[in-house]
Length: 251
Image (cartoon, rainbow, N blue to C red; front, side, top):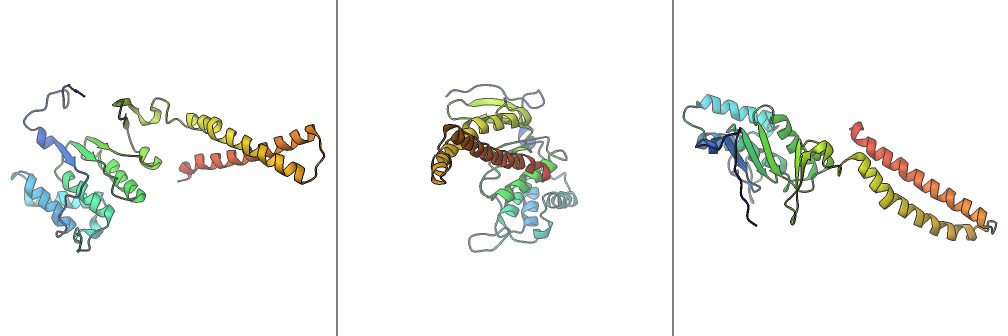
């Protein structure tokens, strides 16, 4: 596949200072397991920041990153390695992000920041990034696979990718071409899941239960029994869907 185009930053082609504006966080670990969280942050600052920035300011940046990413409790804990106990997976991931954030890049690229951590930790990392973005980073761009709904709600803009069609849709999260609307979900759920399953199960249950209980052998009575069973099943499913839809607002 041949691709072409132009890159612009603030409507201008990237200049010689481009590498000082853009940061990139790889998916794999980039912190040293033998250094503490604070030492990793300071090492990144000392290795990349210019000499114009004083040591006190670098320490202030490290302190701010640890505070914003909830790393103060493990500031003096080593990163950890195969045979060296260190910070947890979530703390390690937040430290990897902080190593780049301490450089105060305006644009930050992240390669699957939630892949190697559990769902709860992934949500915590994304919430930290969401809170940090208005304070320092102007633009966050990252790839992510199958995010939970609570993580998906944090996104401002979504670009869906596919193997054949490279870009399916680019738009706001609240209205991604109608695919993510609540009404679309309920309509699809009703016609493709609830109704077919409830109808088939109600018919099978009625055919077995009606004649085994010795009820009156009448087509009209049997149809009434079938409708009652189906409505009871559908009503129970509707209650479950209603509770699940309102759950996010309770949170």
